Image (cartoon, rainbow, N blue to C red; front, side, top):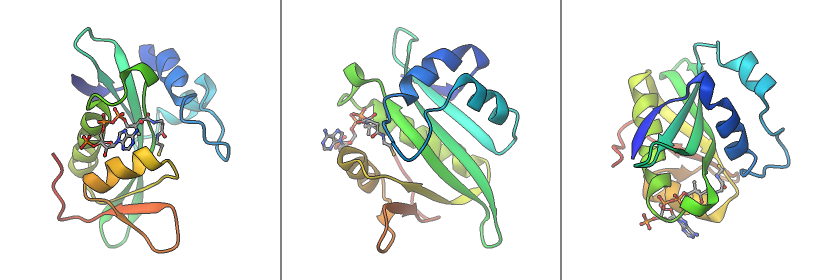
Length: 145
Ligand SMILES: CC(C)(COP(=O)(O)OP(=O)(O)OC[C@H]1O[C@@H](n2cnc3c(N)ncnc32)[C@H](O)[C@@H]1OP(=O)(O)O)[C@@H](O)C(=O)NCCC(=O)NCCS
């Protein structure tokens, strides 16, 4: 498994993967959506490759300025291609994304989910549910592996 930043040439594959996230409240990211965001220094997309170097998963990290923690990282659109789920790829993708968020100055990392399997994964990585919401927070002290 190989974790890396998304390249422009990955766009079609990543759009295809994000279609599987199935969040009715958000638009499915399109090529146009990427074109308007990929130039922003605070917007990051990471991908995970399998041993054959095919992209099997992707995740978005948005960094927002935070008076307490310098940057606050928001992870979104975490997805592993359906045939590849349940083999540890999701964990690898999340561990890589969190490590990059930390390296980019995010002491606090937040995400929001209503998917039970995703929630179980995030819990196992140390995320805590924030009161009365679908948001989860990873404390600055937590180290994930
Ligand atoms: C959530 C998702 C990324 C997990 O990817 P994955 O590759 O299947 O996850 P892994 O194989 O690394 O499993 C990691 C952990 O996730 C949890 N998990 C994964 N699939 C699960 C399932 N079907 N039921 C319950 N828990 C599950 C477990 O806690 C597992 O822990 P373990 O390593 O101790 O077994 C994947 O299911 C997915 O893409 N779902 C659709 C998109 C989505 O809902 N994304 C979240 C949007 S915020």
